[in-house]
Image (cartoon, rainbow, N blue to C red; front, side):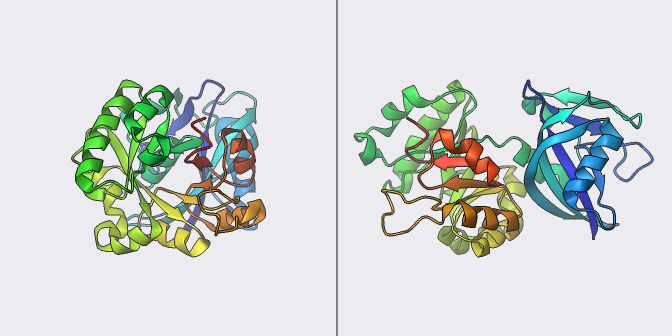
Length: 316
């Protein structure tokens, strides 16, 4: 297994830096996120800093793990340890003569990447806040009306309505999808994987871990992501569940509860130290869930999270 690091690099304008692989190298001509091999007696973080200095002429000053990807090509197997770089010194350029370009996130689909980069492309576009809707009865009975003034450009919303029948859920999801399209927001379904291709503009599905096991025959080897090019998210509560979610092709997960919550008073929060230790062992982006607010995003990211997810604390 070849150990490699890769960097998802952001600039102040929210753009991402990609580079084109030399034609004579493996997967030559395709675009990629900068990085390279981890040398002997070198940590992934050390390799990241060195590779970015050699390839782009920059020194990474703020970075954190994003995810780990394992991919098997016909001629080699690669383990990619991916970091998100949010601050660096000097001006990025193709220090080895390779073409580089800063692109807006929505432009990434216009570039051809190696197959191993597909999970990275998904993770690179994940937001720092993941909104989960409350049940309709918790907001006066009309979830659609409650949502309208709360949608905003760029948000990712999971439509969680466990008390609805599948027919009613599908009808509501179609209405919410239209709203999200109008507001340039992204909609994730909850539990109903069979509705992915029936509702326009849906970007993925969020599945509770117990439901993931029940649907294993459908989701084995990441079929949701591979066949539908959608996100698969999973609600997890420990490292064992996170590992299984990753093995079944999940693109990201929530880990809960971090803090004590009113909705699950019987379950004590794990706290940030246990959360951080668990996330360090995970191989996919993880959102902190349980008593989270928007102000907690920097704290959650400090402890290794992609960001925060919340049912009540994000909407305001």
